[in-house]
Image 1: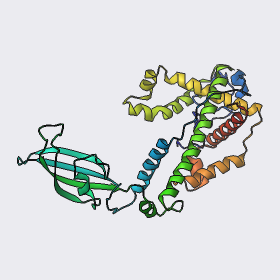
Image 2 (image 1 turned 180 degrees about the vertical axis):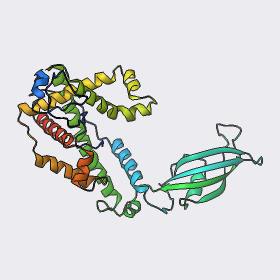
Image 3 (image 1 turned 120 degrees about the horizontal axis):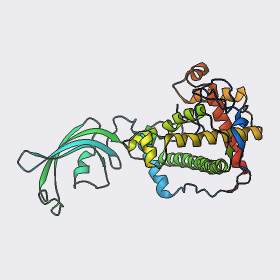
Image 4 (image 1 turned 90 degrees about the horizontal axis):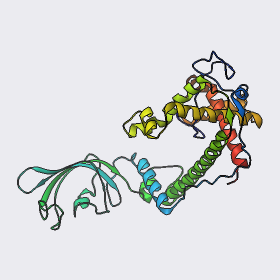
Length: 342
């Protein structure tokens, strides 16, 4: 499961018992605990009164407007039988026949047409007004005399259009149609998005600060030999972190990391050191996580995600060790943020 309360590059580790670092008979998987972490680190770098200079995402008008439009589009797709009008986006397939040849000269699939933006031939967007998803339209419009393609300039084109989807633009009417308990008009929707975007940017800033401090601590700490079992567990985490990005480039994770002048083992060792440092700080600062906190965290996941119907259902898919790791990480992050100068 990829959901995190605080998104950090931490590992999902299976429970195999408490084993000290340096054990020559290391298992394939290794559990780092607050009891054995001191065996994995010689000395930890300073983590108090560190000063970092981390930029916060600027909430510009352009950014707010873009996120508002994008988020509303995802919500508005659920509205069925919406009648296309000015400000709406219509997703269409079309063919166009120019002149009397009968040959289909222009073809488009899954084309998004925003009514009112005048990005198509004069009259084309007007013909879409009043249509609904599933409609088939036939109409004729002309290319302008100064059209860049001289073979089409000034010629009429007979279009056959299939309306696949109508996505409402942001308006009081479209927001009201969502029947939300949180917002009822476009101003309330804009405020809702702004508040959520503000919260996100603040959390992202805190995450970036913690990441910056953690990098400094790791770079000034001295470790024993990192247990092979821990590194192997971290390799799974690296795969999870980079899989989506690698797929976008059409390569596997190992190939993507190579493009970034890194490697799977190198990244796994980095994550292992981060985890050791986090657990070490938890021990030194007495940041304890009890069973009640673990159960509260599990209950929160059950409430948030439909895939789990009970605590037993959640624990069957997610070991308690994973929740313990997340809880410790959260407490260490909160502590580091409280003592870091920004």
